[in-house]
Length: 111
Image 1 (cartoon, rainbow, N blue to C red):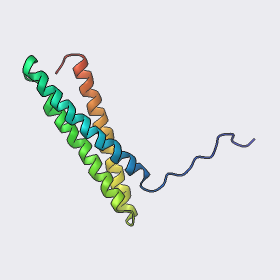
Image 2 (cartoon, rainbow, N blue to C red; image 1 turned 135 degrees about the vertical axis):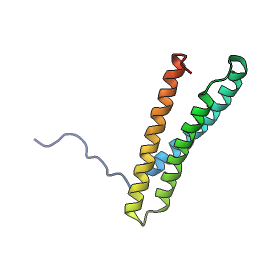
Image 3 (tube, rainbow, N blue to C red; image 1 turned 90 degrees about the vertical axis):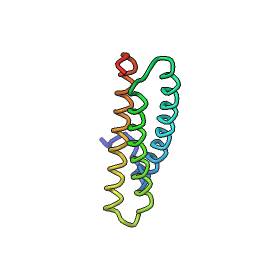
């Protein structure tokens, strides 16, 4: 009996990099907004490390965006393109995990 699932389309070269670039740029903006909000709250609640941590997370997302941009700009060098795309993917996932961990710290008032 043949497989009833529809055939999956192959991902186009650079498609992952374009997706990462868009989302990593958005996450840098979210981190920037979060730093501003934490700075406002620190005036009332006292000093925390949250803004410094979010700043570092923003740098992780920025590195993901830069790597994905470089991957898009180098389609004629497949080995370099794959390496840059993997680095962008790895950095993006690390940024997501870090922002998720920071959220848990906020939720349990540990920061």
